[in-house]
Image (cartoon, rainbow, N blue to C red; front, top):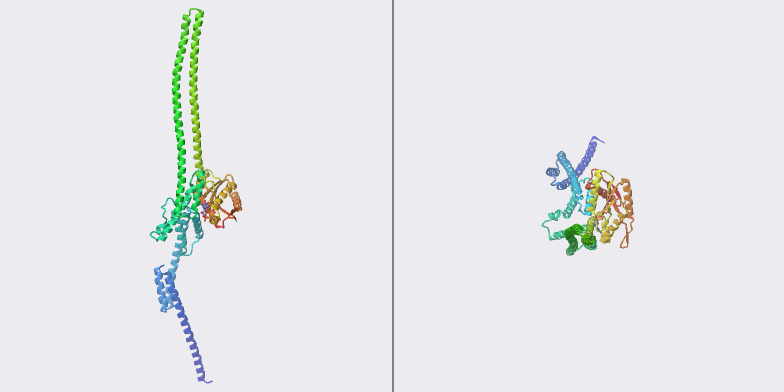
Length: 533
Ligand SMILES: Nc1nc2c(ncn2[C@@H]2O[C@H](COP(=O)(O)OP(=O)(O)OP(=O)(O)O)[C@@H](O)[C@H]2O)c(=O)[nH]1
């Protein structure tokens, strides 16, 4: 091979290499173009997403997009990206701080709302769910929107149910000037508030036994989704019962006071008469005494003027007879007087006895009313007022000299399901059976009360944690085995129990809150269990 042919061959090889290099450069260019366009699209979307969060970020992203579009050198792109990374890092720090603060605020608000006694159990459960779910911070602020919405809703319910606050809630205020559809919702909510209040009033009304069936009938009507007209009728029925009772009570008090005033004036008359008789008898007695004195004096004159023994005998005899007569008169007058006094005394004693009887009846009525005001109408257990009274007394004793004082809250599980599936009457019967079971099974020294709804409270003295846990678990198991039967279905009802011992620094609220927290944990851990805190 000559030199020329070698050179031609080398040129051909170089040509091929050049062609290959041009092709791969074209491929790289096209890749770069498509990647740049992808990057531009990405930056465009990112810009839209971040728009408004931070002005500096908006402008830097805009610049980066322009540089990419015109194919600016990598060094320029790198500089912009470094700026953007810094802004994002600062924003992340700020957001983390805001998230922590929001988390704290949500927790505090939920806890504050939980303390409102009038809040329905369902709302309280929601709040507990919120507290549980938000124990750890969320990653973004957006995740807090549902919890904030729930808190506003619960706050609104609390406002509506609070007797001290105007009946218009926060949501109503926010919704001012809204459509008629919303207004009809508003009136529905208002009816529900009236229903809840009426049920509360009926539960806490202290009326004689004979009205119980009427009250329960009205309460039953209230539980069936009733129209506003029927609600008005129920309201009037309730007023009728209250007015009838007030009138009866007024009549009883009037008749007692009338009797009292009559007896008092009788007693006064009797005393006046006795005083008058006394004066009369005193003057007649004085008269008789004077007569006696005179007759005795006459005796000596008789002795002096007697002419013979027989004359003396005769005159003394006459004088003695008149003295005997005077003494007889005196005895008669005194007997009469004594008889009069005895009669007066007897009649006064009768009247006082009668009055005593009336006042005993009245006292008994007052006692019964006091008992009723401390008694739950449905279950006949102590009610919440009685619990407050008893527990504050126990706390006072505890603070004077500490001892094992424990508070237990027992709540029926899924009770709403019983009402919804088998009706409110079945629900009421369940509560009554539960009350009887507690009365039978709870240690004799413990205090039992229905706190409200399907919640019962027990107060134990002198029981250790171990003894309490054993006793409460036995009770829980016993309740779970009770053979309830509704509409031919065998139903098992379970309970969740929260228990705590009172500590030196406790007051009624902190103690109740801890027991309630224990109950919440029992519910949260799957119900049908006892949790000690
Ligand atoms: N029958 C009847 N039901 C009542 C009475 N008081 C409250 N309730 C009902 O008790 C139910 C309580 O329901 P929730 O607060 O949801 O509690 P729950 O269904 O037991 O759920 P958990 O407590 O989570 O197990 C509601 O449906 C109330 O209407 C009452 O005196 N009689």
